[in-house]
Image (cartoon, rainbow, N blue to C red):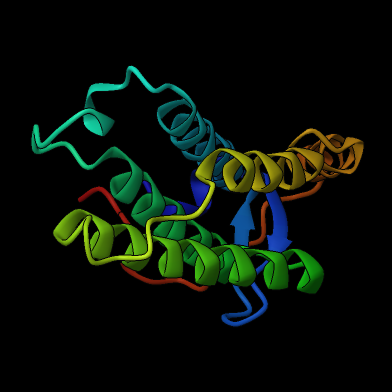
Length: 162
């Protein structure tokens, strides 16, 4: 089987690479970002969360911030819309900064400045991403992509069965 035989829905054009990203991949990226932000919000909002009660070796806030930063950067590279790409860059930068702040806090709770209000931060970003993920334009783009032919890639040894 060659990659050209796979049923893909092309939805966006990656601005940096000029490659098309399947709609299903973009949906997964945004859904996963929203889920990470929701998990972070839940951990930060619940004072009974064990990771906030002591040194149990679980660094939920820092861990989810790192995931958000990595996913935002990865998604930006696939995003064909410049405004959404810039939004993802801002999210990645902020999450990276907050991760480092949280890391310093974990390493030295007494000497650090504390940490940001992660409940409000994660909620605000989740709401912004939900506007993209649940947008009717995405549904239209998916329906349009399903009607289009899958672009034919150049001949080559792309996942061919012998």
